[in-house]
Length: 531
Ligand code: NA7
Image (tube, rainbow, N blue to C red; front, side):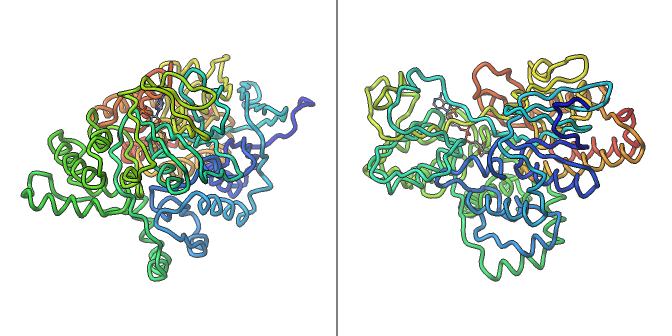
């Protein structure tokens, strides 16, 4: 043991978000010694960093939370169908303390290097503040949306007012009252924060590059009756969620768009417009995401809705996506977003018409001139999927760097392992998800834990995915991505990150393909994985 190694554990987990907390719990329950390293000063991951006003779930609260403990399920009452960030952060703290996990977590620990050592079959991790952990296994639960990014706009640093990124929001509340505010970006974060602050500010300008097919979230409080129902139905809810391809409780429709008459279609679209969150996608006509005409029919309905909510025709025109289908980009869900533009102090600027030329000391300048602000909010997204893993200095066998292996995009097996990187697992990572993230990632954490137990029970120190399994998974990604509607300029191809290779970053085969691959590995006794 080299003198500078501060701790030696069986498993080191990086990132205390929803999956990291679960991985810590599972590994410790399986009898491993575990250390969790977390960059922030509290648990929560996404729900720690994104504390901007209006930040909330768009998966139903109880479908996003943990399912591993019925007692936990019964004791924790979510107040709303789609809980706000403070409540989710409280929940994750509650779980951490309830299962006595905090003492395994080292906060303020940003990992800057993780190096595999073949001889000892283990990883050594270094943190920015000089802490060193050695571990047999390294589980990175660093999430897909954990590296915020700012656009490369000249003068961004010159702004003399307050500037915030939604994904790096300060702990102290920001006082928006009476301020002139710019919100830049209209993805899920931008369309949440803008209406949440609109009534406090003096003026609000929303800078939109690509309009979103946003639809109402339709949040509501969970009634006492519904709470009782949720408690009573734990087993069946869990079963439904685990069997679901997308990780939601929504019941799929059984008809195609043009099997219905125009009147029936209109009534159906009205119904799903009023349905909760992702139900607009998951309970829509079965061909809505697959058939262009079906998709266009739905978009025409959404356009009509947007026009009915926005008084000013020119503003409505700008808000309607012209260049992508529903589902081409990740659809946001909103509360009062479109209506907000009817307030006289709220303005929409289309960056297609007037791109930002620079940020000055006092405001944002476009081709049409300077607008002055007290606060600029950058809601400009994240280096999706591979962002955190690529920044951790991960080095595998024979000095192979993960950044090198992934130079043209991630190469993985089920979005959890990569050949050349033994004993490294990254549940919830790139290629990992195709729906409600905790449901996909949770299954992956379960798989990793069982694999670690199996290796230990069979006296194996080294686990590496065989190349043929990785190749088969990559072929699946390539073959199935054509069925996805996601556009290459969006985050799911890395298209929103300057200089990043374009590669599909989700699992286009969904849960069935993931379960099939896991099933093959397990039923063969992890053939080729262990040595
Ligand atoms: P998103 O969804 O990546 O949205 C970022 C927004 O910022 C989007 O509207 C972008 O426009 C805009 N953006 C990015 N760069 C620029 C520049 N340079 N100029 C102007 N506008 C820009 O991130 P969010 O934080 O909203 O959502 C992240 C996830 O949270 C989401 O996927 C859900 O899982 C929940 P663009 O579309 O690129 O033209």
